Length: 461
Image (tube, rainbow, N blue to C red; front, side, top):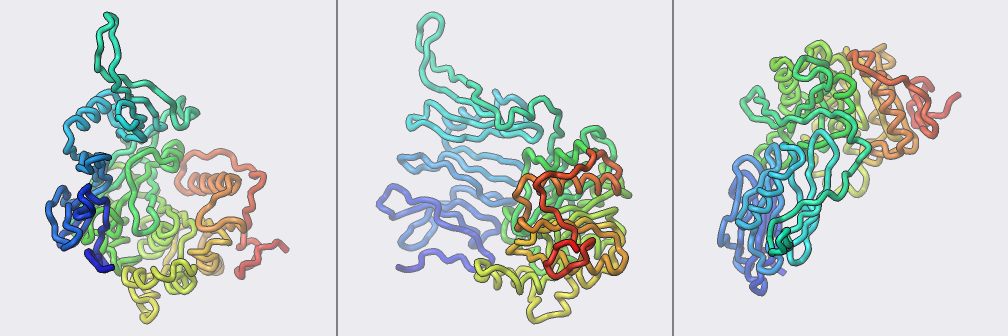
């Protein structure tokens, strides 16, 4: 064995496929020597690039469609804000143009689920942001018209809808938006407006994605639709450090947690929504899970006048204790996390600077915390320590613990229970609609602050 390609820390890439030439050449994606990943045809003996097939200055290469026999590139997708395609096969391009023209709604995105070997029949999907996904059979087989003459006009036959129970309801479309951060960096965001408010001003929920090395994308999001139905606009933003936008954008998030540019991007996104007349500046909630939960805590501590309330789901409050308790399967990733977050192991001052736990006194807005006692990634102690600290200082906080949940809530009874509590919390502080909260049979919700325990023992006395 010998190395042909090496992607050091900070670079992205990998082998996509061999070409049909006895393994002499292949396709790879690579960010080496460039900002975003490109699709390259390479010599697998020397590692030299034979051809740069495609790259985009703003985002990485996505899916690649290859001919099953010749391995020629037929199409490439990329996603800056929405899914886009570049075609190298004109016949395939005609197929997509036909399918796009026949879409049930103009804004739907076309996806291919499967094809027959001769490619005369396809199962395709129409993905939309304001309704369930619909599936069709696309048939290009030769047929006969009324005069019994052979015709090659393709047909499109409905198959099923992913969730037909949603069809009678009105949903809010998701808009992809561009936000300029304070340093001029362009950020991609997604806005779902409140159903009843339309284009007017409404309370806003800033929904922060986890990871943080992940990204939000366009589409149907049940959580956003829930908020829209209750009278809230929802803004999601791919802050620096999000993936898919190239290595520079990704590493602009290094050492920028909490008081740095990653959090500034969220603050700037809220200000954008206020300036655009979307958000009521006095009724804004920051909401998220995992890193999004951390961003919620950071938002309430480091920009305490910006938010009316916050919802933190399985978020860490002390980065040092978070990394000290990572599960064994995360151990190989720990050094990389330290490079991205900062050296909290050897710099206690830096850890205190970015960890919300050490800034509890700054919090003004009410906080709702949800956590799973069996969380292997963000241990219960991360929620305990900030919840009890706030409680002892008289800062309004609600803390719900589910003994049989982990990093997020899986059991339907617990999901329904927590969502009901979120509804009540948001209605109280932002003024939207809420259903009456009723006890959910089978939910295991416990309340450590009411039970007076911060050591993991949540039994009532």
